[in-house]
Amino acid sequence: MRLEYFQLVDRVEEIDPVAGVIRTTAQVPDKSTIFEGHFEGFPILPGVLLVECMAQTAGHLVLVLEKFVRMPFLTQIERAKLRRFVEPGQRLSVTGRLVHLGSGYAVASGKIESDAGLVAEAEVRFRTLPFPNDAMRQIMLKEVRRLGLEVPPADESPAP
Amino acid sequence: MQETFTAVADIIAETCNIDRTTIRPESHTINDLGIDSLDFLDVTFAIDKRFGIKMPIERWMQEINDGKGSVDDYFILQNLCTKIDELMAAKPA
Image (cartoon, rainbow over all chains, first blue to last red; front, top):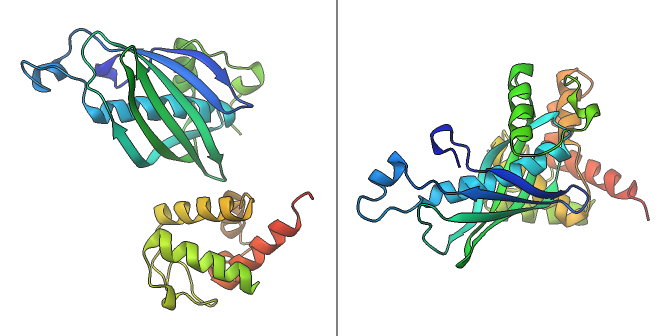
């Protein structure tokens, strides 16, 4: 995780666009100013960041399914359950599953697990919109490559 | 169409917490029922699931922007239900 950049996912381990499933890993940093406030003497990753981690994981699946033409923006969180504390240094496995890809929106479920067991779950919904500009699209392409996702040559072309 | 309207009205009432008795075939989703864009996404998802279709909302919006259709064509419930029936009829068997 690069908390200072609000990047909660480190690597895409598996993706199956046909099945609509993605699995990522996220390494919680040992130190962060976030832990100094949350909480001093009992550092734990804020629950909202666990939700964001699931949203980013599922969002990358939606990006692939939308062939990098439309950008998913988080609009709704349903039935979020935060079951365990997450401590600095923990390694998380995050799974995103597509529930529905609609016209201009997407719905996915997210799940986070650690060595200790199930950590969190939620349903996340996105509004999918054309990229506001090609610069942002290029930044997202660079980000998905950083995560280890291959971008098909056909999807590299500028958005229509 | 009546069956479709009943299902859609029930979805809207439940999803948007609107009094079911105020939802009529001639109701405008925005002007009469006050459904905002976020709630409309919820309604769209529920309708897509209920009828096993994918309403082409983005295409409809483009048609409105291009002047090829009016807001009423899609946002007045009886017209929306007609569109839903057409999408269902077009589904492969």
